[in-house]
Image (cartoon, rainbow, N blue to C red; front, side, top):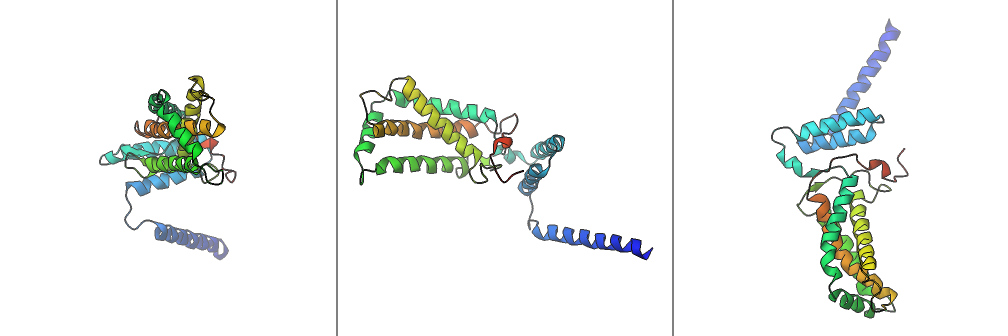
Length: 230
């Protein structure tokens, strides 16, 4: 009897230690956001599809609770519908620039302004697109964007999706409308034309993605390309 009781006592002590550790790591003043963060983390750890669906249903239930109306601005999933919304936004913002001759002038200025043969203004403009898109998605107060399943554990999927969709849309529309090669531009000028339209398209793609709110459908988490995730 003594031997059989000892494992139970050890188990009880272990459970108590785990509970104390969990309590120590818990937020000092927990709120609904903390609960949702825990549920998000739980959905990433469960293996079975039906278990993951149960967690999603619980998250949806919490978000519909009275007094949590502000959570309607919270976006956690990234779906194929978000990609489509980004495409629509990119097209709407890129269209006016496709008929503007000013795009050619700006591209020529980018190509002409170099340091040791490097088009520094063009590179700076591309950097501005990256920074502005990140600011729009994650620092502006349009929506609260949760970063889940980043690509390779680093790059947010929504950020990459908005940039890639808007870049592809810009280059394709310039090509199909005959504006990319008009006037026999240099390669740097063509890149500059794409970059100018890309700036507007990226802004439109970001707004088109986040303004409608959380999209319905299956999350694209399985395409996160995280090589460290089993």
